[in-house]
Length: 315
Image (cartoon, rainbow, N blue to C red; front, side, top):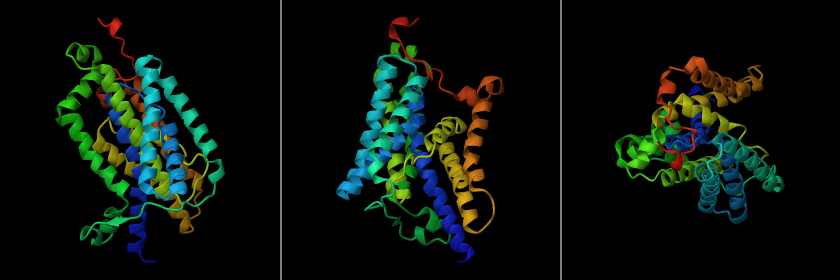
């Protein structure tokens, strides 16, 4: 195998792995921009993954599988929204509970499918002319539909957030819900809508993982990628464009260990598996506490992130 084929395969795998993170990250950015912190991405992602896998095994229909993952993720988002927006409970506790619930539910539903090879999978769709470009063309323009969707979501979400009236309302709710409410913006509806959208996109990320990336089902198939997506939002300073770059960077790190081992380089696989999580810890340390008190990351954080809005307590 020549270096062109090796490089192309490496880039293609990096983009595929990064797609899982990118879909979840875009969803979380939209949710957090409304002021709702969602730490349940791991649970939402794996629930989307298991429902997509079960549906495709049962029906062989990829469209239904994708729809199932979107619905499952949205329902998880609805639970989180009800607990945090309506009941005004702790967003941190709700997110952690959803992760525990989601992982447990997925492992329970998927126990009869462990090791089972999927009957249908997302196929690469080459884009004419562009896919014929050496190295880059094959890696970027010969991917499955969900990869293209994730890439399109980057400019769409950026325009939505920063260049539309809906985005202005979203940012107002996330920054100062009291002022937004006084201007006639429905804070509760806004937070519900974007929490559901975030959950749906995270469920879609799980679908890509189970019917587009992995060939068979396994317990805890997400392997902590939901947590990486949470950290990526901070790393990207809530910017979809930076989120795409960060997602592919993490995808590169996750794939690197596997590729090096394939070439017989004696480096422990677990070392490379640990790198994304080590980087996650570093990001969190320098974006919180005294290290990040006056940092750009802290300054760009939505002002009401993690704080339930109580209209009766408005000053």
